[in-house]
Length: 405
Image 1: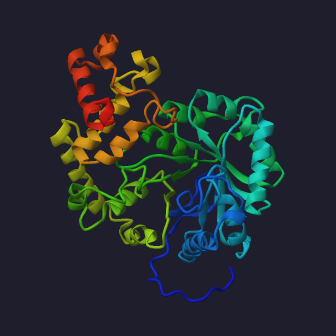
Image 2: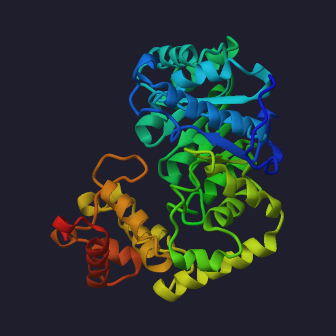
Image 3: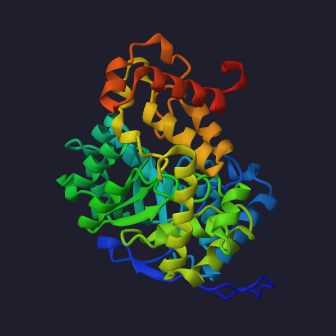
């Protein structure tokens, strides 16, 4: 790595590394996720990016690398991110960082291949250490990726050409889809995965366990924002997490799972690193973290009767098999997050995504619950149908748009 001028910023502990599953890569437990630091969500030309926008990103990358956060994660659909990185990475020795990009699967694997090659060109790189199929979201993307001659096969060809070192997937779909991807064996299966799993969302625990059984690398994505918008936590969670911040507790909760190798720090400004790095001094303090988690569970049980917000999710059929395509399990999870842990704004934002064709928030909301015969669904869940509809109506009243209530 080239020498750089001394910084006046506080020097925080470097993150330790863990072996990233079968890849053998020495992965820092904190990775730099680059979605929030891009200048634009649109793929605009570099000459339209002001010098200040490029300097901001360079400062973030420089600080991350200087602190040992040597894994940089971006994606083809992160707007200007790949293009902006090219000139920044050119200042560093190639073996001083691990680079991951993510490219969406396509029906035509040749289109996927062309997109990967274009991403390499945008990045100014001959190869990436890690390529993720972005993402494994539903049965259609599972077919795009895993069918004979599909996008996974295309990625392995790029690997044979020396353009990709390791191949994984970024999973946003139901846990059942993720488990099928993990179990896939053709074309050597997958080497690693990017996964949503946090204190507030443990539904993907079976995917963690299955990945560990296959010695796959596990990268937890967006633990702060997707993990409950913990950058702006409610006072109740601040109180029970003390002396940690909720961000720090959640980081440690994730990193203390034996299957997890690294988590993303989605920094947009230099100060965003501090909480994450300062938490590492208690990385092995399981007693403190589990003590705080007991308080989380007590709050949830007092408000909902269950220690986890997703306790009833498995009792309901998948949204595709539910009349009206109502995603009852997800709705009740969000309703419980709002009631038990005061994560109202997070829950409202997620609830608003229902019906918007979002892979990680599929199905429809509970606005029309009374229009459908949900008797069979209620019976399967062991709940009186009127009670179930009443809960859906309460959830919609709390979480839905004002015009829809």
